[in-house]
Image (tube, rainbow over all chains, first blue to last red; front, side, top):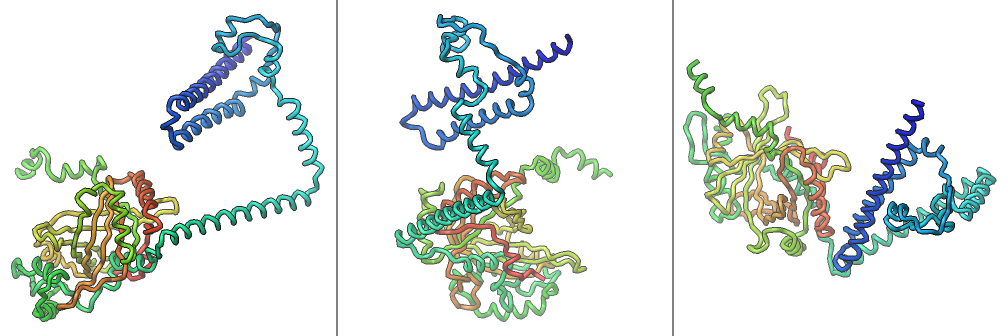
Length: 251
Length: 226
């Protein structure tokens, strides 16, 4: 008795969960249809595809619920159509929001079907039979062949894309616009000073010995060595040498 | 003792607010960086495209002309790697403060990380800075001048600039290469990795004109400061 109650409760929560998922899916589909009907002039592909992504998300969630945890209790359930009737059933119509007005003979086989359609089932069986009679070697051969075809198509596509990229560049009359080696040279120079280290640094505070007090040298010096200044007196050089010898922290 | 209690009584010291800011992780001390270059012949096209893509288009591109000196501070015991400090000075705006900058080791991460990430701290200083660094025992490693254009796109900064050797005497400054260095960077607090994706998307819009990439100069150069 207790066990039965528990089972019933479990079934109820399962159905509740599925119901929620199905309702989510329904709202998503409704939203998409609504969008298509009202915004068909302004809707763009990304938004449209986003809607599809939502749909497929809901579908995945639904099938996960059905597959994994809860399906066992549902599988053992039997739904038996007790009465078929062509009369309109108000309760049923309300329950299905007007989509199924009556439990009729032509609807029930579709609604209560748990197996694939007979035709599909037959074809599936044929394929299964074919697959089981195939020898291992032939299967391997076919897989290899298929891989070859796929990689060939892949090659064609990527080559086409490369050509297209190149063409679009050429047709725009563009020469190569950047050079990897220049990039490396610039980045290395700025990062590590490669190619920027002269024999003697051009900016050295003039004769700054410790304890000499603040020198007025450095700040203007930084400016004087600037390339934009035409005035670059040769006196600087002699100063630099002097500084090199004097400065206690050099070298 | 009296001094200590006075310090305690002070409502909020600079150290307090700094540590508070550090704790709240609001200090933009991470630089997300992509680098590339464009040949001199194509730089006009790139500038044109950037003007179309970026925010500050009305006034025309912002120019800059800076000189950067890289200092190193060595560990007297030769234990640790030397600390590198960079000083920048605007040559076109003489009254602007000097900029002192520390840049950490670039972290390239794996293939899936869109940009280089490195720590970056900078602060404005007066012209006394050079004296100060010299007194500290810092030594000039190298220097260069960099002249070009700066663009903004949201939080992103894009610079297109020519790098020059500092000229000796009256020689005109000598460019490092026949290309402009192109950098795309964002300063952000730690952990804001989403911005890196935006940068990657922006970089893709500049292709094939410029290819902005994660570049590890350590691996390229093999000229560590020793």
